[in-house]
Image: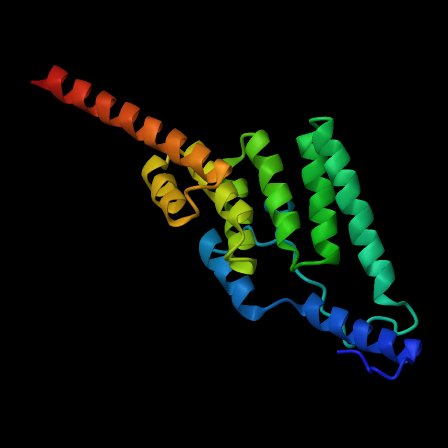
Amino acid sequence: MLSGNGNSREDDRWLGLRQWWRSLGPPDLASMTMARLGDGNNYDDRRLGLRRRRRSSGPPDQDEPCSKVNDRKAELKSLGEKAVKRKNYLGASKIYSEALDVDYFDATLYSNRSLCYLQSGEAQKALLDAETCVELRPKWVKGHYREGAALMLLKEHKKAFLNALKLDPANAETEKVLWEAFEAMKKDHAAEEKTLKSVD
């Protein structure tokens, strides 16, 4: 909330306070993440991209406007995109993790890091980021698409198929996941029938 009186220093303070509040992270998101991880022993595991949020005793330095924080996030996001274009998915995932330290609530960053994990074959990490993306932006199709792609990589074709049906079937990305899941389900079913016939 800005002061509205045109006082830039006061506006920066409001933005600084907002950034500090956001840096604390929502308690339910942290608990949902812990529930997904199970025993919680991996909470600090950087490879999963789950770092403890720094909790300070007060808001960040009021003299540093939030625009610097947003500039840093934009810079990291751009570096991540360049790494993806070079097919350096490991490097890009590290850059996106660093960007998430700047803005824990950016669903786009989770989606982008999920893509990197998918391309690296790390389906479990990709699914975790995709689920977080969906929690942050439930109506964003791309988050659901990433979740479906991760489920496909995990060979959970039926769940991916059902998730794709919930989305906009006219969307090209959704249609692609839908057909991939359907074809994989047909192959699985055919393999099961073949196994059953060979047992008889």
